[in-house]
Image (cartoon, rainbow, N blue to C red; front, top):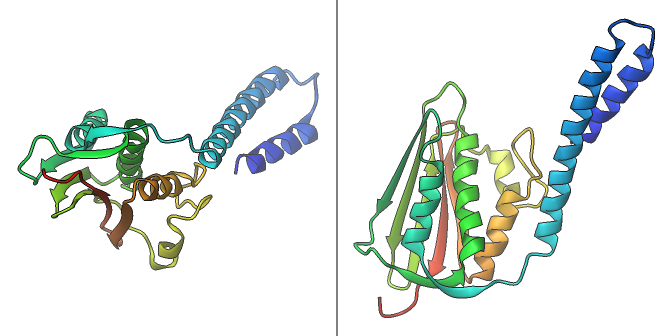
Amino acid sequence: NPLTPMKLSVQHLQRSFDPDDPDFKERMASFSDKMIRQIDTLSTIANEFSNFAKMPKANIGEINIIKLVNEACELFSETENLKLNFTNNTGKEVLTITGDNEQLTRVFNNLIKNGIQAIPNERKGEIIVVVEMTADSVIIQVKDNGIGISKDKKEQIFVPNFTTKSSGSGLGLAMVKSIIENHQGSVWFETIPPTETSFFVSLPMLTNQ
């Protein structure tokens, strides 16, 4: 919560206020920089809540889900200290679903980013993304070798405003769940702390593919 460090910074400045102090200008500049960063964070969180509360109406069209997921992987493939593998187990280059391209792109960007953020700095990161299919659905798995999700947090993981990270709004996975369910799909996870977590997304395919 950015409000807490903002309050502490203001209180500290009040206690140490002395315009005749030769270091005062430097401390004021440092204070201003901190406040601006925290205000930017608040603005980002407010925008995320606003976007979540008024999720735009889906712009539905036909989407090649294999291409969409692969492009999401490519976005993160150059991340430092990370190995990212994309595997298409469907035997097809084109697998068509109906959905909103922008919203589904946000889903997979979010899942991959969350996976990366779950990996400790001292661990060589690995993200594995696998696309598979059943008779009527496509299933996308995003697996990371991060710290996993502890038992006491499992029930809250898709709850708005809940986050296991030190920053952020806690809306990412709530947004993922909302978008996928609006696409008549489902999302779930499996985790083995402290070594790995996999998120799964199932979406209905168009028939006769």
